[in-house]
Length: 261
Length: 265
Image (cartoon, rainbow over all chains, first blue to last red; front, side):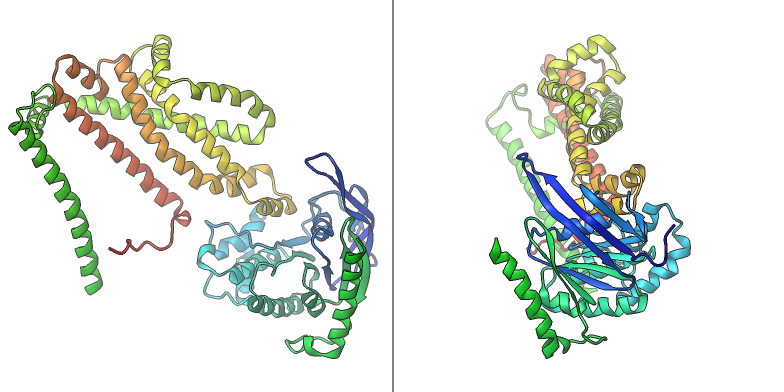
């Protein structure tokens, strides 16, 4: 049984290897151990190819580790868990479905009845500021709006953990910042645990309770920084001295390792 | 109101130009045939074509109906065999390896050459014409359906995997709708191929149909009737193509461009 004392997510000595097309072994993640407590907003930052996405896929249960164990609520994760919601870099909505039907989509995949959750879907769409767009098709929305829909879609089945893989990476800088604060507002209201992967150190510090810094080839955790900046965070947060200190620490960790290889 | 008027005017102008071009062509053809006294069996004048085709009006609906039945039947047969085969090929690597070589061989054999064999096996009649039409129409449906089913966004599939969704649910709710535009683009090709297949079958062995009419009127040096029947055949082809295009617009409206304004003149 899940014990209340166990962290929501824990990885113990997790290694993941891939065999490439040419037959060589690539170690995407090497002996990663970490624990994530409930309601934490954790960002994972690092250069491309450092295994950030692999880390999320392992926690999402859509890929098994080569070595080590991944636990969710203290239980070993053997298959995808319904307690996990995923948001990808691209919104990947179903182009033939309206916003409303896209939000309900996971319920159908889970084999749940959609009727009892329809009000919740409307509320979520309202929450991300898309009220009035319920019947619009994805092609009628901007990239930022589509990504808002994909966040609603991840929240509709009330997962405990939200895994976000560079969700704002494909958006322009202004939309990106808007959505970051929007996400913090939603997180504040819904109180989820979030694992958020990003390239951007600024984004990582701005959002997080804790930043995990990774390096590439093989992907390892090199730094784990609690971000003690006060909440709520605002657009001015990133101009404070404390913020700059955090960003500097993380940046030096990322680049020191990058130069090392 | 003004907007409606301009749209109407624009439409009238567009259709007017097309009609004018057709009329000019027909009149020119008629005049040239008369002036140069082209022999009737070589190139009949439009008036001659109309008159001779009108003469056989009593039997035309029967022949037209036979070909239409072979086209529609062959087309439907190609769909109900082609789509399931594509599904099998996509879901089973084993079946892909087994089925594909056969499909490729079948496709590389000219169907015209295959028709006599098929008729020998299945016998003459509407059902064999349908089967010949189906064998011609079937290949693009298999290929496009398989491509469509496989082109589903990888991340979307990961999303369904993270939800632990069953293969059947993913097929009906994601893969099949995703493949629909691909399927329809192949159906538009397939329907015109089905017309070719039906006529080929009627050439090879049949006692009715537009293909049969072309063959007999050619034997009787009735070139004017051949032209008339050819016109009917192309009308059949165009009408069935637009029927498929109409179904596409109804079934996958998300795929069509949202901007439906006609291009500026």
